[in-house]
Amino acid sequence: MKRWKKILRITLVCIVSVMLMTVVSAFVYMRQAQFGEPPAGERLARMRQSPNFVDGKFQNPVKTPTYAEGYSLTGELFKAFFTRHPHRYPVDDIPAMKTDLLHLLPDANVVVWFGHSSCFVQAEGTTFLIDPVFSRNASPFPGTITSFKGTDIYTAADMPAIDYLLISHDHYDHLDYRTVVAMKDKVKHVICGLGVGAHFERWGYPPEKIIEMDWHEKVTVDNGTVINAEPARHKSGRGFRQNNTLWTSYLIQTRVRKIYIGGDSGYGDHFAAIGRQYGPIDLAILENGQYDSAWHYVHCLPGEVLRAAHDLGSKRLFPVHSSRFALSRHPWNEPLAKISELNGTFNIPLVTPVIGEPVYLDNEKQPFRQWWKGVE
Image 1 (tube, rainbow, N blue to C red):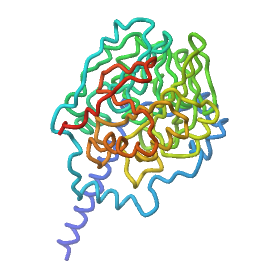
Image 2: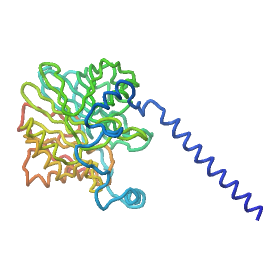
Image 3: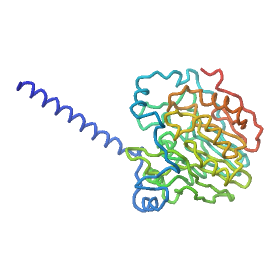
């Protein structure tokens, strides 16, 4: 009996030691710069004045549970580890082309997509870079959530000077530490939601470059262009703290056009409200990918993307958030195939370029092929 008690004591000590070492290691690892910095001081004081900041966290416009009815964390973890999900990664290289962004004509009005949600926009002489991720993974842990073959043809070195870097929220697949550090000397201004500026300051961006916005705020920039921060239905956070920074969508109003950038968002009444206030929208860039019925309150399903575009009064719909990273369980090519199939009900012109192909804002009749067909 004494022998078994001794073995039990030793076992318990080992278990506690391993747990303690794990906690300490996680704490030390998460002090790395890539995890950013929580808001504090005057920044936190301003956040507390926001009507969207309640009980120490930002809130969605409507109740937004992480999991939809009938789903749970344990059930989703079981699916993730013990259920097969075929064809999440393509076998073939994803088609892509290299556009020389460093030598664009000043009067060219274009959008260039880099896969997932990363886009370059030049409109009326002003340049925007949206949620850029030029590293090979969308995670703080090396070797995880790696990009599809053929999608890493652009780097920070390929970018021209950027007037406005727009960040929709601080999740790793939208705010990439290595990318924004590499872009630091090319970016004139950063526009982001409340609290997100703390990350940029830790990464060496001077405070005067950073413009933090609450929903329904706006800023007038070059050539009279107005950038409006609007609601989205999502979450935020880069560590254990969740929803301590604001997620947002943007409406860019130039003298001649309106471009809506949805960021990550579940379907909600905010799309119709934005459509009523600003519509019609010339181009809506909306997430369509990395979705699941379990978490459709924070990520639109393809049919909901079309409804959102309709609510916005969009003349053209650019579905993004696909074709680069596998963050969900659906086949890699399902998002574009599904939204094309369902679009017969709405008949909204779809903008579906290959990665790197210029989308001409002045040509609403520009044709696009269904490039994902035939790619295994």
